Length: 255
Image (cartoon, rainbow, N blue to C red; front, side, top):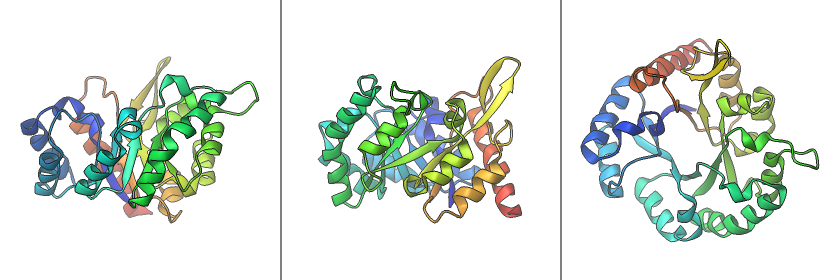
């Protein structure tokens, strides 16, 4: 399992080619060798790939708007083949799918793209937040319905450790139960500040990353654990990425 960086953490510095090049250089200098592309500005895919190659960074996962899956799956496939990136992510479930009936519609709408991706040797990955763990009228969670409607061979889950905890799930049990879908995960700590809940660099919150790394590192499925911090609360996002990287690498050396 490789520790990578999620570009969403530094999205403010990825909106043009010059800034992206400098950002990727900083990420590589920390020690990362793989990245997820998310919230990148309007930069040509060929240029993005060249900048990643120049800095020795593999593109291992992306986030894409729903329209790319529903309206332009062939273009999505071509771009990921260019990136040499197998995992094609959907970062958010559109609001119209937030019911049991909506989960069934989601499967109907996204299955054609997921099947095309699989035929091309790629895989659709869905990134969770907390709302998927809301209880539905039948007592099951929305996530239960989504997983039932979209089988593991068509859709993996980029499990986000912070949002699993925020949503009230058993983080460690959930990661063990859904191993077959966890090709990529997002690592993000869950910190308490007074009465506020905050995202934090790994080691700065309450999650047990020794246990998380043990689960993911020995399941035979997870290839990439990607550091993400949506909000750095005024701290440098590059410093947060470094803090997380150093902490995780230390834990992995000790394991």
